[in-house]
Amino acid sequence: MKENKKTAIEEIENKAALICEVADRIWEYAELSLMEYKSCNLYCDKLTQEGFEVEKGICNISTAFKASFGKGKPVIGILAEYDALSGLSQERGVAEKKEFVPKSGEASDAACDRSAESCGGASEKGNTGHGCGHNLLGAGALAAAIGIKKYLSESGSEGTVILYGCPGEEGCASKAFMARDGEWKKLDAALTWHPADCNEVVTGSSNSCIQVMYTFHGKASHASGAPEMGRSALDAVELMNVGVQFLREHMSEKARVHYAITDGGGVSPNVVQPRAQVLYMVRSNHVSEAVELQKRVDKIAEGAALMTETTFDREFIDGLSDTVTNRSLEKVLYSNFEELGVPEHTPEELDFAGRLGRSYEGFGDVPGIGSDFDEEYADSVKALRKTLGEELKLEGVGVYDANSTGTQEGAACPMNDFLLPHYMGYAFEPGSTDVGDVSWVCPTAQIHVAAWPNGCPGHSWQNVSSAGSSIGHKAAIHAGKVLCMAAIDLYENSDLLQEARAEFEKRTASGYVCPIPEGAVAKALDI
Image (tube, rainbow, N blue to C red; front, top):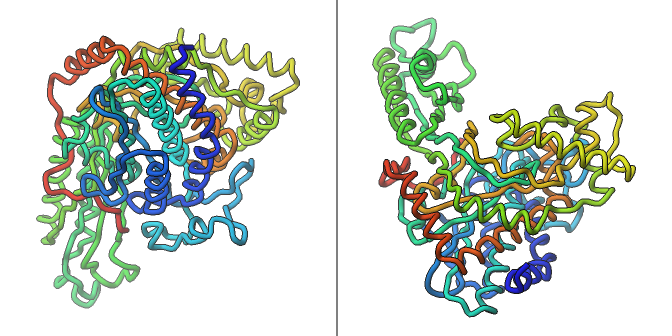
């Protein structure tokens, strides 16, 4: 490893306690989308102490921030997230479902103070948790920024690093609002990561997504005594849902439409419901397709209102784009990931991972994005897992009862402690991320680092448990190192950035269709 990278990596290691402290405190806060006030303040305070120039409330989002260091170009952005999910309160580092209850005096300004207001309207006090590992995502991004700052300071090189605090990934898509406001145009490249069950460079596309709330207004009446006087808002919601069911036959096979009735109009069946509300989520592979599909859903809402003689309000909630692949940046990330290796886990950590893995199905699944699309690639990953499992077996680690939940293959290799081959083929993930909007505006790439056992389901209590453990700490620190090393390559080799820019311009030649309309304001979803 080059000396400049060694110096940056050593700085991250020297700050490991800080990174773990931040990860743990964000884990304890577990604040919902756009309610991450404590989390935002913590990051801004720590970054100010570390010598960054911090600006809070960027793009009119109160819990968003950016922290800059350096001067001139190139400008590399590192993306952080820190919002949690509702219904996922869970104790850290345990292999059974157990609600997190802070000890007396522990996190007095955090988890034990999760009122309905501070939790963004969570239905149960404190019933929130980091089921997507965003406490680690932000901490790992912080680690990368600290390492890059050290490099820029020591080398005297021209260049700027900006750590972006991006709130509300789960329910706002703040990066899309930032894209609308031109924030990502300032960057030469953006790098990020996400906790996962394996170590890999992320590639391929994802679904775009738009959320809209429809609130129908009718007229209350006695449902038996004077039904002709009533106009049912709930009827309108139901007819809208029926209309969308028929739409499903006439949309792309990659498109998805989901809905949730957030207000059924009350609990009295003998009252014609004067108000009802439904939240719709429209997905499609490309954001331009999602925008057009959303227009069709709007027309169905109009039809439902006409049929029931009701009216409705349409409230845009959020929208985000599909991801744009950038192989040039992927190669930079992969070469540094390969040089650095993967996190190493102790027998105790592997034992915990194995016990946690027995609590869900899919423990023996083949990991990696490419495994779902390329049989030969999947076979190569199986071979890597088998080799690791045999090594662990020889050491007497990670071998569990094959009759327990999960397969013997999964039990023998609870953590995927190896780097997956760089997959270069077609890949598509049906989920959505607002990193997509960044990737439509500047060259963008990301990695996955194993933060929980193989096959661990997303948005689960198992994720929360592992994200609060030493396994999660190691993932955050390691991710920061990989991102930092890749950024150093970009600062020192302008050809890499030029190649990434050329590829970006080719892949985005059709133009960016921002899903966020002018005038829309990012706000917490109040249901």
